[in-house]
Image (tube, rainbow, N blue to C red):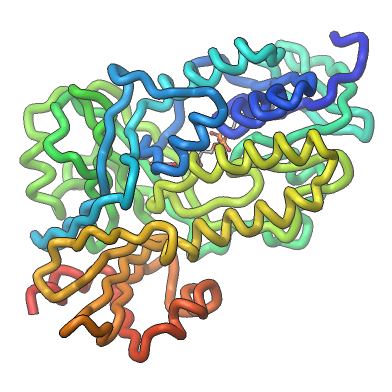
Length: 406
Ligand SMILES: Cc1cc2nc3c(=O)[nH]c(=O)nc-3n(C[C@H](O)[C@H](O)[C@H](O)COP(=O)(O)OP(=O)(O)OC[C@H]3O[C@@H](n4cnc5c(N)ncnc54)[C@H](O)[C@@H]3O)c2cc1C
């Protein structure tokens, strides 16, 4: 197939794979991407791209067309009829259909000279490269490559082949495994915020993805809880009213989501990126953003042949995403919480509000999302922040409404 070895062979042409391919091409490396699917590749996703993700895309040379995306300026929690909202400190986030995003990445990759093989599953990796299956999957052919990048999603086979999940770390902790479903509705976005509706049995988030459509994603620990079931929106009467009469413009699509941490993201010449390299719960809306930032980093590290640096920097990116949001995503514009809150932060499924009285912080309250994170998790990841406050109260997020009404 290729007479001479390529520098980088990428398994998986989803967002992480294409972004890595583009980043590697920026350094002049030769790149081949293989994916078993055919573009444009769709996936169950809330389709919100956080501001850092938009910036990473810009660095990859991808800009979002105004007629195929929609900006939103912050996050709004809605729980038991009570709303709390806060804006991003600087730039907006964007909603964009996965198929549009995929096409934009694909066009950019083609323009950069990435060689793409679609409908081409990868059947194994070898020290010399990767084994590519023929279309009927009866034969395989070795493509020789200096580096093999596993961008093959949360059930990564490259991860298994490279024995990067052999110590069980890759198995999602059962309690963090959740199920996500999404559908699109033909309705003009009613808010300039991404809305997170918190129910007792599930969360539903609504992302504006164009002037005339919204993406509705439901996340729950119960796989039977589906958007297509009429009672799924019972807990959210306001949302149900908004969507009443709106035409459905996509069928329901589902996927699992889980927290996943790996001790190492490379071995020998095989290296992981995107969901293959670990993940955050879908409710954080951080998966794509992380993938693009990792891809930029990996492009640099492949060029300098320094995967140890990638390993370290990858860990701190995940850490920032999980915990450093206390500093990074500080929603300084005061939320509309009726109590004297100076800010609302959303940290890995945790909404944290600081209660200020007479200019002094009295205490900080964390509303955590059962099944996604917990007090111990917070304590481990963010001791510095926790140490800053004298008293911390921790409530499940379902208490948010009641708390605010006190
Ligand atoms: C319900 C839900 C909602 C979400 N909402 C958001 C959100 O609002 N914002 C956000 O940023 N993130 C969100 N995420 C997370 C986001 O979707 C993922 O982080 C993102 O898709 C990761 O991209 P990836 O390229 O790593 O993996 P994937 O998108 O899974 O792509 C992997 C690719 O690898 C290919 N592949 C797999 N195996 C092989 C093989 N052997 N050979 C060849 N090809 C192979 C697949 O065909 C696929 O194209 C959500 C996730 C879920 C489940």
